[in-house]
Length: 358
Image (cartoon, rainbow, N blue to C red; front, side):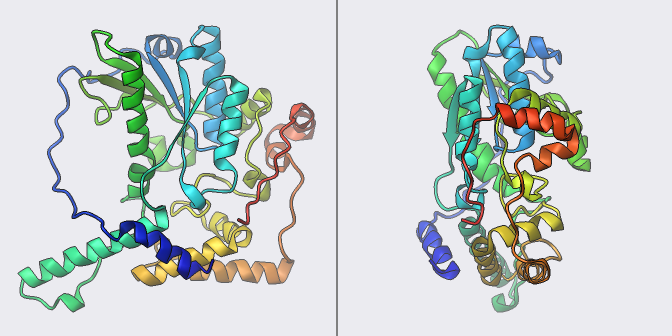
């Protein structure tokens, strides 16, 4: 299907989109604690009724999951562990959901998939643009100005407006939390959920400032108290890859191709090298992003359009030829060496080959 047709089909999901709801003041239930009762890993795990491991299918969440499952197993708490993957649809790298499920199966823990209702990130970006445009035009008319000259705020997600995370990940995962609470039935107290995330300080300056353990007050209410824990917050890249090698779990081959991060194949927060590489691996998907750029009148990344990304990808293909599949273990070997990587690969019986160009 042509890029333009694909986006048009996605937009049909928003044809009857309701008017934006008025923001309401959120009140935190008085039972929700202001601070966690402990920051000791064993105590956090033991106090939790549910241990929820967020998995994007990427290396950090994978290392976090295998690390926490090992701790939970020693404490006899595996029955409380649930791995959850927020399925982002076709904007994800191919095979991501299946890989996350395979990792959970090998770890011997429950696996859940959640997915936001409606269109994917591209369709939501266009729908968001029209809502922002309508709002700006209404405000202009109220002020006696020409609505055809209004400047519309960027519709793409950004570091300051990460609506993609709240809409496509956080919201659906909170619905799962509600279901998990219902599964336990009346306890005579709020259910305690330990929400584990694979975010690391080494990823970015903003993530370095995140607390290792904190109460997730917006996600908590009178029925559940949610503690957010970042178990590998202080880990280096080398420590992450050592854990993957130890666990023997398969990792996504996008890393062997050269990607530094996973989840969305084109992430607005990704570095230039990543998005150009993604355009070489997924040219059809890059074309769809370029189509949305034209519709919303704004660059995919601030100061870097998808059109320019595609141009740079084409230039690299012309100079060096099309990318060839790298040897398995390429990414891991850079951090743990060829010997350890060879031992890891000899234990790995996951034969799935992912179609990254889908």
